[in-house]
Image 1 (cartoon, rainbow, N blue to C red):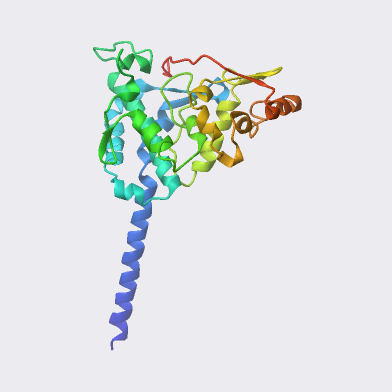
Image 2: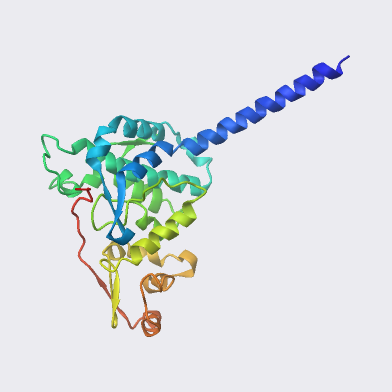
Length: 277
């Protein structure tokens, strides 16, 4: 006489547990869904897919959705973040950097102070850069974009992945593309690899000619990040040699780069806004 109630109780417990697990999974999967929708609809590939343009005007019309996503990031506590695996943490931080950069542009677009915004640099002043503005409520503190990139991502020492420089976007033409989808823990490795190849194979910003490799100034500003042993590479040249096809390096150029005989030159950076016209 006790079998039926006990069986029902067990089934009920399983259903509740399954429902909770499904809900938890759905919540995890949906964390960046709204950001994914925003960039999917408003970021367009150009330059043979090597770069993207952002329709900031269209996102301004969807400002409510952007703010709602930013609020969801703000709601994540430090202890919750600390409990995540590294790929989930890094995807979260990259998305946060990109989304708040877009917020900085959108909130100033066609404003009284900036009726015709041409560059993110216009949002700084003589005494401070736009990246040092503290306007990002994240992980219990009000932070700047610099705090996210140089403190939480680069400065933490936890991730040691120089490919993040091809994922975080500074709203400028010279930057690696703002990806047309959100970064997620499950796809992060493939996304970082694709973004790296996407940028390095752009011959307007990285080109090997004769005995000179001319590359983006990103490699000058953050050169140290490419010398910290990522996948066994301890020099910028060694990092580049991981991507000979993307850089279209001939065998003799690969040999010269490996021996340190190939000259590396840094190109000027284009700070014009990466806005869709």
